[in-house]
Length: 170
Image (cartoon, rainbow, N blue to C red; front, side):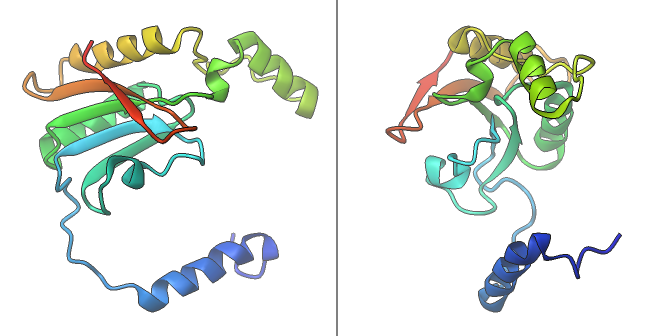
């Protein structure tokens, strides 16, 4: 269904028009120029390229609620390591994450109260202990049989109030 005549996305299209006026195709290959993949949260306070001091094309960025290492993240990391020159991976959740402020049950109840939708068939993967969860997610990548053993994997916590990273090598 074409939404071109729907004003819901007018700001997006206007922003894209401004972008396209000064856009020049930089000739990037689609590979990770800095050999890095970053798994981070979808939180809109995080600008992954700026946080890492990198530019477009430097790294692969995977985002989801809570910066969790899901099956789809693992699938994507396999492709990134074998096909897109990734040999370093950082899992980077952040302080003040909504996924660490509620239990799984509380999230389901909140959605049910706000919308009447029963989401109990979904697993949201809330976080009860951020550092322990980060360590488990880093280990999940390290132990995944399809990720090459020579790929460096680390965890980092991003502080949304200071902009600083704390790197962990569990």
